[in-house]
Amino acid sequence: MWSGPKGRPPSPSTASLNLSSPINDSVVNRCLTLLANLHQVRGPLSSFRSINNAGEMIGSGWVRRSEDSKAELLSQLADKIREMRELRPSQDRIASVDGGSLYDCRVAGPTLRFGPFDTVQDFHRHLRQVMEFDSRLNSEIQELIKQQSNSWPLAFTHGDLSSLNILVRGNDIVGIIDWETAGWYPSYWEYTTAYQVNPQNSFWINEIDKFLQPMPEELAMERVRQKYFGDIPDF
Image 1 (tube, rainbow, N blue to C red):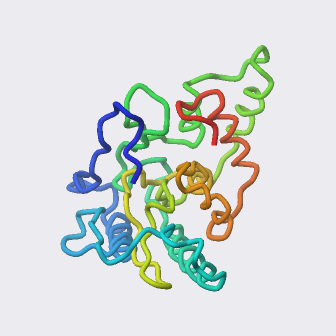
Image 2 (image 1 turned 60 degrees about the vertical axis):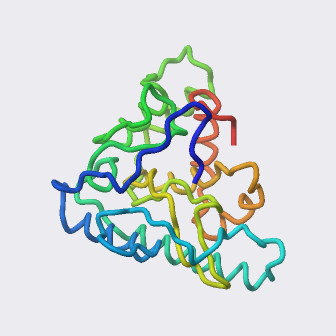
């Protein structure tokens, strides 16, 4: 739901994605069907985004919830994310759901869109502004480049699992909204982007490990990347 830094244009609606020539109809249709279930789409499945008036943000009244209520909601959220991550891409490339470019205003670059990328290493090279390993570099950057040379499996990723984007009604998750940043990413990306917590919802940082698999090494790696190559404050 975050609209990005002041002065940047609003994010493009995922409803406008061109799905007329998807790289694989069955994969796209499975993604769309899952997204419909996750955020209550009513109408054609060509739209990723809907306005859901049936729920409220999960953070509303969180401190007043019982521990059992919190645990139930986080368990449901974990189940929904697990189902989403069971999807498999038709091609091993980092891309949007239809195989095109990605959007994330938190990723530094000359434009708001980037990719697609044929390999995880190509993606990482973009994230560090095409810098290659050099023994004269800062030791933290050297270690970052070594870490980023590893490979991770791809996973279908929302990319902004902020408390602002999860809707609840009572003790039920009824929607996940704002899918502009969704796509096929390295499996750690969901976890590390979730840690980019809106300062107004700092409580959420204590809940992330309860619905996503903790990946502390990748989180540390991303913190170094943000330190040297990010255009937002350290998280």
